Length: 65
Image 1 (tube, rainbow, N blue to C red):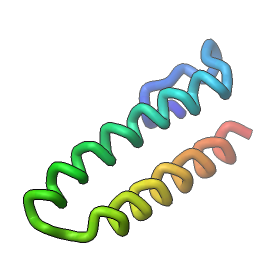
Image 2 (spheres, one colour; image 1 turned 120 degrees about the horizontal axis):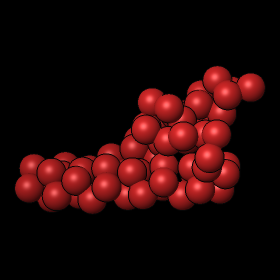
Image 3 (cartoon, one colour; image 1 turned 180 degrees about the vertical axis):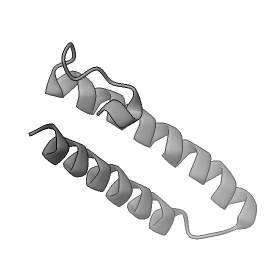
């Protein structure tokens, strides 16, 4: 979680996950704007970003323990 600037010593896992989802939402919103301008595959981009957010969360969770 330190990669994202979260202090895991003072934040609960739920608080960290909430912040990760906020970051994910920003990525999705940015990708929606980009894809809508490019005419690309919005659903595919959203799925990709969701997968990336989950992967990062799992990696960070493993790194803590």
